[in-house]
Length: 251
Image (cartoon, rainbow, N blue to C red):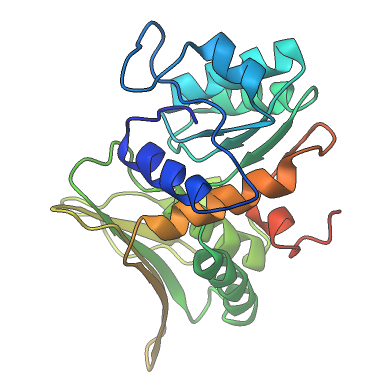
């Protein structure tokens, strides 16, 4: 477990320990950090079949490159907020090691993405505007959340366009009328909100909202553990939760 002393690190450790067929081989944190049951990164990687990582984009990218360089272990990445260069580095690492990377490990959220894609395919941009809303705790570093971006990608995929060409991430001041086909994002940060996501399809005469509410961080931890169980022994490649849940048809 990477980032073992973080909020998600502790939740994942509890989820692993609750599984009688799994064992937590080692826990590690930032380079050079020891104590509190932590070991060095090299020792942890040598002891593991899979590493679960909920740290930061920079740390996750570096870890993926280390795992690729030594030919394993497999990796489950739950960090969000990667830039293009970091994503390219992870994709390169996946040529040598199996990596599951997802912005959200919830079964419900991944079902929501499928529903959003289907709705966007049927509710066209000439009549329906799409807004993605998300809310998280005050400690979250990136915005919009990885899950919100995944939902935006699902909506864009349903309409056959690239999200980058239609995304509207912020509105401030005199913005003018909304452009047809735009996919907007709205963000709230505050308190201890675990995770709220919704996608609204707004027409002149009706509004459809598809939503998901996370009540406990444990649901993400259990999903990450399911991903770790699935990816162990897989051939090199970059996978996501659609693969883990069997939605993609990829074996």
